[in-house]
Image (cartoon, rainbow, N blue to C red):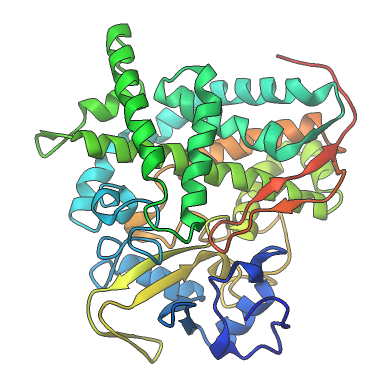
Length: 413
């Protein structure tokens, strides 16, 4: 079943929300709205004849996210196939795959690198990077927004945080795209070669940064980290490194691109932000709610249970649809409307809440705020200049290409 059938006419029992064709023009919000009303705990048929459960309401996504004893990330991973990106035995070193108490211990390691004070200290460096990125295209009056702005800023911030050389940015981009492609691949364990390459690179970076005495980079902090008196193992360091390279870049990249696309679909918003920069933080929150670029993660039931009257068996896979929860009519007034004046929306762009709330949320918000402050100031008349190409995925809401034009301006960096 695909988007060729109207969301209002389709037999909901036949709807497979993991079918990327539903997302060809962006998330199918009309279909999600119907599911929230008629079938909020949806028995989702899969192409292999099995099924999972698709959870679409805000309250249910929140409750499941907080009940890690019943709905596990560790049991079978966060994707539909346990070995989707990496073998589960290796992927379980990722924070995203852990349950308490292991998750609690390891989260403390990375949490120190993303404190509000740490993020605040990075703001000048982020603004400098944004300025230099805009400088590269501002005189031309045209660019591809994804390639020229959305990609280089978060990727550059991440590599700077890790203490790796600027000239390695293209290699990091290749790796992050390889990990993203592995998530969409029909073959399990599709990112193993990427992680082999990253392991070699990480070893060389540790040697270089030790020789330089760089104690403050995230790479060296991971190497020095201890959990209950024990150092992280090489595989644990590698997978943390891979998580940062992917989750720390891809999500902010996609939010930047889909956020700008949303602003362009609502004429006057860029000019409004340019006229009143104090609106930018609220606009960022509404962009996060409206676009929700990570659309779902899987949890696995650890015992027989029930969700809204639906019997869930031990071992059943349960998909938490953040993109639907962020537009739930029970919580948001007029949820399909993009409103930068909306007061503090309780969106699910950073996960369902609870222990797996995104560790880098503060850094992502700072990057997005600075990006949209500078873009609205220097490119207030930015416009689409051609067709937008979407990422062919039911998991990530992202753009591949977005040509834009704007009035040429001077460099500032």
